[in-house]
Amino acid sequence: MCAASALLALPATSTTAAAEDRPAAPRTSVADDHPSVGLSGKEAAKGGTVTVTGRGWRPRALLTVLICGQNMAGGTDTCANGAGRAVTTGGDGSFRRSLPVAEPPRPCPCVVHVATVTGPAASAATALRITGHPVAPVPREPDGAPLTALAPPRLEGSSGLLTWFGAPPRRRLVVTVGNRTPDPVRNPVFEVGVAHGVYAPAWEEQQWRGTVPAGGRARISLPVELAAGAHGDYYVSLKHAGKILAEQPWGVGRPWGVTLFRLLLCLVVPAAVFRIGMAAVDRLRPRDAAPPARTRGGRSRTPQPDRTPRRPRTRPSGRHRSPRT
Image 1 (tube, rainbow, N blue to C red):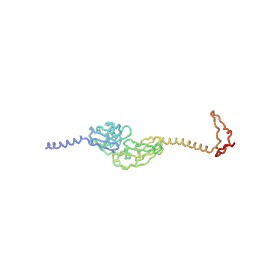
Image 2: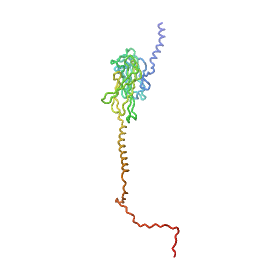
Image 3: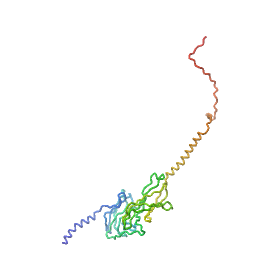
């Protein structure tokens, strides 16, 4: 009876093992137009390995691959940094890397987090269950702020030709935030502040349309605009529930088109006024007699009246008659 049961269970065991050995389809954590991360399996045991794949990254970029607990809501302190790996993307922005499965210092829910090391900041993550690792709810933020920044912010966009002539510079502040509360956060309201030099930032409320799930993360994108003709060093800050989540410097170039226009204006206007004045003087000045003629030697010569005797003009007759003898 036992032998028969063992024989009946053998095909099922073989089928299950074959299914575990076969790599699963990569799972992406973000949209196709953003960097994505995929895993060869949704669950792995400590001491094993998992294959991490990615696409949509910057070509030839250096990335770090980490296993983190608590959805990485507490930053890299929740990650198994000693077991992390580095990988360089290919020319098409994709990569493939084998990662050892290590238990993070914090309980699950766990994620495999991938982020850039140099260049513009970019990150992505996907969920991973670690067999036997404890699971606990994501703790609430001590200061009461439900959201926290998980990656350095970045400013996306570029200045156009009109900005070179004094148009307002525009960018989009992009930051990945995590929800450390057991409740989802719907349509959160942020404050975007812009500071110039030593002056305090001017805050403006902006509402982000979307939901940050409990223990999850979301990519926040908010517009930032400066005044017309602005240039110099600025700092863009993001605040939520009274807590500053991120700060990003922004160096704005001088609108040289305005300087060039002012320079041309300073040259063209005086030249036009001078020409108008000279034309008015030329029209109003009295007309003098004709100037004396000059000889080849450069001496002036007063024209003399013509004293050559002139013959009287006779009226022509119709026929010439010879005198009579």
